[in-house]
Image (cartoon, rainbow, N blue to C red; front, side):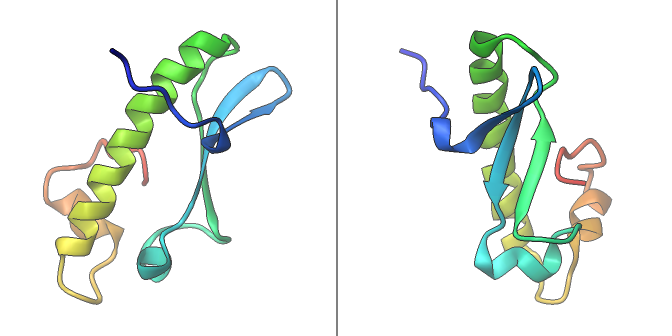
Length: 91
């Protein structure tokens, strides 16, 4: 059985779907960008494909949040990139 992304994390702008996540309170100061949300394009107009891509991206995001939490306090997102995650979707 395939887990499905919760609709509350997906938005549509024009015809394209996006993943829209609130930054975790404990990581706000360590994540790039302004504002309380991270919004990334799912690069699709197809609803079913957006669910599949959104689910994958959400899992990647949660993994990267956990990795960032494991870094010493004061480390930013570039600490994660330096550990071999240059392809991170967060940065």
